[in-house]
Length: 437
Image 1: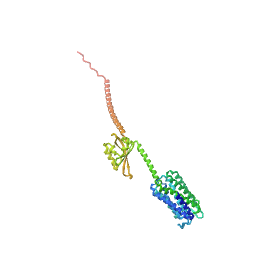
Image 2: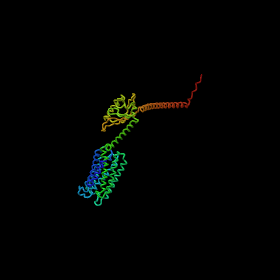
Image 3: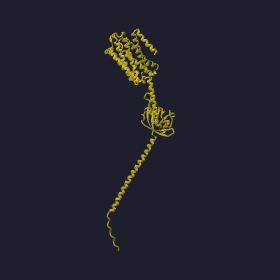
Image 4: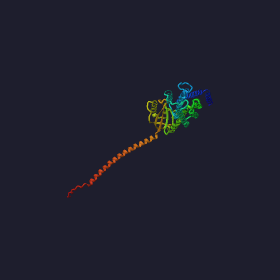
C-alpha cells in the first residue's frame, strides 16, 4: 500500500512538469500491469478451472496494447503525423474500453465454469483487429473528439455503455463472491468499481489536459493498483490462493465424493471387493466381511484365490482372472462360483465384474467385484425344483390312475349292459319231459 501510494503521488507530481509526461507514465505503468497479469495468468492457464480471471487476463493483453497506441497517438506525441487532433487518441481509448467491458461481461458468465484459453484469445484478438482496422484503415470509426467542441455524443454514449458493463460485472461478482478467495474478491471488486468511476470522470473533460482528464487518469491508476494487488501480488506471494484455489476446491470436492462413494461401498447390501493384478485383496466392504467371516484388516493383502476360493474351482477361476487382467477375454457380465468362508463352509456368490484401469486408460490394474450371496436362494430354488419334480411325477401317476380308472369304468359299464341285455332276453320254450313209464 505504501509503495503504491508513493507511486501515485510521484506520478501525480509529474503533471506539474509536463502533462504529456504524466499521461505517458500513467499509460506505461497500467500497460505494464496489464502485460504482467496476462503473462502470469496465461502461463498458469492449465490450472484455472474457472474462466473469470482467464478472460480478464487474456483481454488485458490487448487492452494494454491499445493503451500503448493511445499513448503514442496522444496530442503532442507526434508519432502519427496525420493525427493532429485528440480524436485518434480518444478513438483508441474507446477501443480499449470496449474490449475491457467485453471481457468483464464474458468473465461474469464464466465464474465457476471452465473456459478454453485459445478461444478467449481468439475472441479478443478478433475484436482487437476489427477495432484497429476500423480506426486506421477503414476509417469508419465515429469521431470521439472534435477540437474546439470536446467530446462527441458517440464517445459519451460508448462510455455510458462501458460503465453499464462494469456495473453489471460488479453485481455479478458480488452475487458469486463465494467463488472467490476473500482478499482477491475485495481487490477485484475495488478495481472494477474505480474503473467505472474513472470512466464516468472521462465523460466530463473538455480538453485532453484539463482537470477531469487528470482526475480520470489518477483514478484509473489507483484501480490498476487494485488489480495488481489481486493478481500480481497475490499470485506471487500467495499463488495458492489465486492459481490453485479452484484446484484445491476441486480436490476437496473429489475427497468428499470419495468419502461418499466409500460410504456407499461400505453400506451396500451386497459384497464389494477390489483385487489388484496379482489377485491380492485391496479393499472389501462390510457385507463381504460378514459373508467371509473375517475382519477387513486381516483380509487386506491376502491372495483371493489362495484363501477364499475352494480347491475344486480354484484353478479354473484363477485362470479366468488372469486372462481378464491380460485382456485376453472379456469381463463376465455375471458369474457364479462358491466362496470358502473362515469356518470352512462354502457360500454360492453371483458376481459382476468391472475393470479398474491405470492412468493411461488402457492397462487393467485390477478388478472390482460386486457379489450377491445366493446360497439360500439357490437352496430354495433346489427345494422348489425338487418339489416341482415330485409334483410332476405325482401328476403323471394321477393321470395314469385316471386313465386306468376310466378304462375300468368303461369295462364295468359294458358288463352292466351285457347283464341288462340278458335280463330282457325272452325265455326259450321248455320241452315237456317225457312221460315216465
